[in-house]
Amino acid sequence: MVLALVLISSAYIIGSLPFGYWLAKAKGIDITKLGSGSTGATNVYRCVGKKEGIFVMVLDFFKGYIPVLIAMHFDKGQQAADWTVFGLPHLVPVIVATISLVGHSKSIFLGFKGGKSAATGLGTMVAFCPLLLPLTFGAFLTIVFTTRLVSLASLVAAFVNVIFMWLLKNPEAYVIYAVIGCVYVWARHASNIKRLVAGTEPRITLGKKASVTAESPASAASSESSESSEATAVSSESEQ
Image (tube, rainbow, N blue to C red):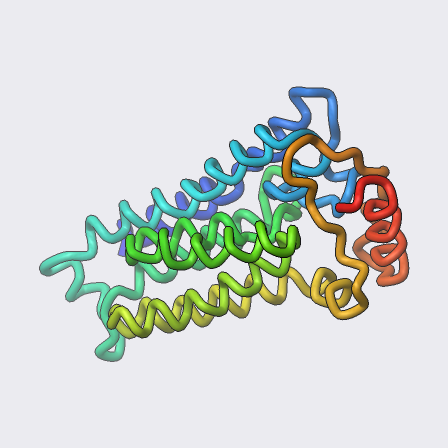
């Protein structure tokens, strides 16, 4: 039990590391006051630069990957038996993965704010099943390069990931987690879904850095109309 608590609490702290915020801050940019206000890779890509966005995506991926990999290392033999609840094994690695997602989007270092957990979620899934890297990430890249809509790519990837996890005959606990992760990522993208339906979701520019107008975080969090206005402003600047 003590080991499980250490792994779970460590997963939250690691997941909370706001790499996007810190990298942008090092360049004199407060990422929480630009674009969507998210500290994730997509907003860094738009507001800071292409290389920085990709770098943050890699770091966020490993925030999910490493804690789960460590938990799986201990989830063997007698320890695995001790961690089996109601006949369902592998629960501690699944809880570690879930807490990593929460840590990224509710960072203790940023007043419980953060990103949308897509890259971190992918990291947790790949730790459980390495084949998901080419499959789920491949689906993500396909949507990005065909539509330039990162939010749509994240939503599609989260959904097909559940199917891949099930088709590859992973343990039941892992499949259940894939469903939980999908629901969580979709919930974190609620405002993006509204803009996708309205046709106002900003597209990324594949190539050079795009400029983004500043947005009030408070209005972004509380007003759907301000989100739509921001998206329109960004689109008109650089066809994002």
